[in-house]
Image (cartoon, rainbow, N blue to C red; front, side, top):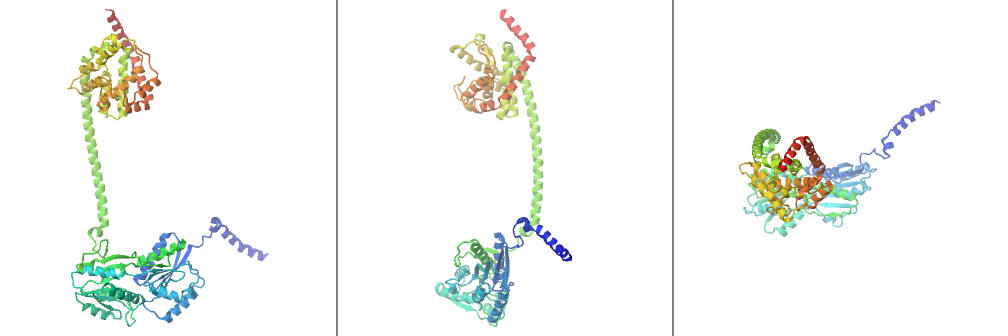
Length: 611
């Protein structure tokens, strides 16, 4: 029983852990953070600039790829020691270290690491899925490739650097090209290639190759050089006594007294006293290696030998050295390092803050100016409205005297007809987009469109049947009569009223009367009044006809769209038909309210006929 109790106490926590494990819910193994594991095998130590920047290029690409990659690092320290026994011991240690590790990728950096791999790699990492070598200075020993490996060549363009140096120093009598190396693997490969290239491309120059000198000896050589010497600092990290140096120690020590600027082949020497040149980028070689590994993971076909195509190089120069040697003719697109910090760069944050504050103040000032302008505009509109009101008052006084006789001769229906035309015209004018002032003017003048009918005989004006051709020609004169009655150049209202009276029977498509105008040659007030007038006349009872139905009246407007009436006005009219009918009905209510007065008026008219 005691054993069962102990077993129960053990199993319960295990069961709880299983139940609440993420794997139970996701039904996948989420324990591992990484999905792939790679090793970067470096020839040199991490304190070497080239090593550190290579890694940065690799890490940046893998980080952006979306792959969850765990990276291991190994350093051979080949700049300090190339001892075969030490490498053998290191290989034995690594074999034990990686005996149970399967690598998804192995990136080998530089020639020494590649030689180490060729000797020991298959035994240390037999299960490495993909192997990529980058920064390999010569593919001659590997012209057939290495099975299971992609090799990326690193070959600085020495010829392009010499051409650049000669061009930048063309005013001097250059006679000797001097090259500084050491006896490391990379330097030996470079020296062999440079000697061969010089014999082929630059036989006109003498050349000197310093590869077994101490820093003091190199300093003496450069200090004693003349204007005819050009120096190229290739690589130097160890002297003939096997004393090793940090990558930037020797150039800073030996280049101070060079008569001409000293050129380099790698970007990491910038800032040590070299002027620069067409230099290789360690970072880009790291990027290339990582991108190649990603392509292999994706199952893409990759060439086993990737030859240098210039994509890892760029023109780079040190501003301070350019200035010291008064050099300014650099290739277009060159990168200049160590340029003086400009005032803007130094005070960037302060300038941005000041700019923002200034912008806000300017915005506030702009808003204030806008408010002032709007206020002035409002005041101006107030003045205009006051003037318009006065104009309306003055016009009304004139109309009272001019149209007294007209009012006495109008029938009950026609009087309310002009009210409806005025209101519908005002509505159409608003929808058409006319200004408030124009709407007010049109509302005042549209009722006077048929004032000229005062000059038309009653037997024609109120004929119950169709007018004869001769009668219709007489009827047409009402437009000209109305114009003559209303024209008054000194009064704006009367001026527009006369135009409406004259042109409200002109047709958009031409063929109207009295002048046969067409389109926008007809004043917009007349175009609007015309459609309001015709529709209301169709919908109203006349002595010569019954009122049309709404459907028939609208059908007529559509039929005359683009002929009699402006298409835009027909569209506005039909789109707002319900509201227009409401406006007309409101006028009929006015009619009923005024019926008693109108009845007295009609009685007077009838009495006059019997006298």
